[in-house]
Image (cartoon, rainbow, N blue to C red; front, side, top):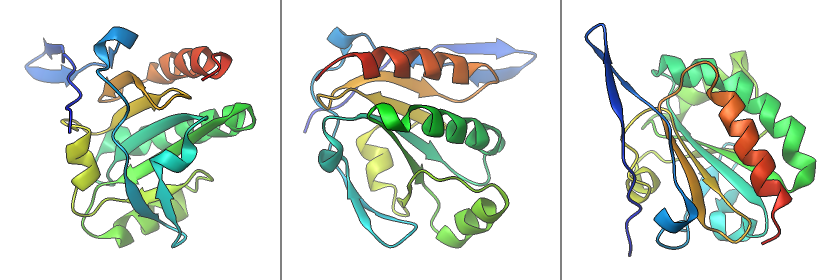
Length: 170
């Protein structure tokens, strides 16, 4: 099994470390995105390999993460905007207790699939080191962009990257 490596730039701001997004150039991705199968909120199982041919955004999140909560409605907007162009978004909740995610999603509903990774197996496959972490996978199944953390405005970067990837033919 190969590992996906990425550099993380940390900026100290008023004594607080911020983790910034790190785009991965095509040459930096040393192969395909690791495949996984997780159970979705609706009880179905979802495998990344079943989504080959689509652009896939994988967003690792938790209810205790304020930036994750802030980002969720913006992710829903991206999903509804680009879903018809061969784009899907998988929200991977990393908490042991999925009921926490269910309660949050009652208040902040989304239409994209929410998957549960209570043992953090998929999080480990993707070397998730910050919440939220977002991975963009191209139609051929290769990791193309990684984002660690979230700040307002990142959704503009997501949108530009999604547009780039949906225009490509895998």
